[in-house]
Image (cartoon, rainbow, N blue to C red; front, side, top):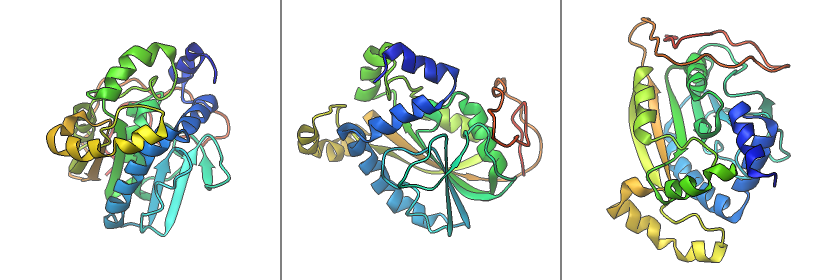
Length: 262
């Protein structure tokens, strides 16, 4: 693995191919596989209830198919990298190569955690998502053992500790700003971030204990929100515009401030 400063600079300069490679490798490690198994299992319980024709996943994590349980007849995964086990469209989440209102379900598996401009990602999701469509967001919880670990490892710049780790309350605020209705949420994974697979298996009981007694201390959260269209009044928070689009990617329809695409 590259030195920590190099990986940190990848996140600061944009979610480039090297960052995606490091992130993919981490989710293929024992700890990453353990977390993704819990997340994927939760998605299998949720996605079948979200209907539509097109389901879009922004970014590939490890080898598990996270969007596969969606009943939508068309599944699309967008990533800067291509993988043998998944059919992907090359692109960045900040610049989605899709038409307005062309997607019914959008899955963001830790996409905001590692996006160069998470606000622009949400603007693009809002642009391509059809009215009454759903956005499903997975993120790392900073108020957890993982968040404490990040405080000590962030400077090393290695994934996942170099990620943003946005608080759940902030994600909800962003969704409400876009006039989305938050329909449900789940806290996931209470085991400490250890790479020893056998130890992690023995600590499985912590998930049941934590879910009952310390729900807000989970390592990750899952939020589902529905796109409601009440009007067309533009909303313009003080979010910076996205960086220039890379070669070979389509030009987005919307630039600048956040707008409702109803």
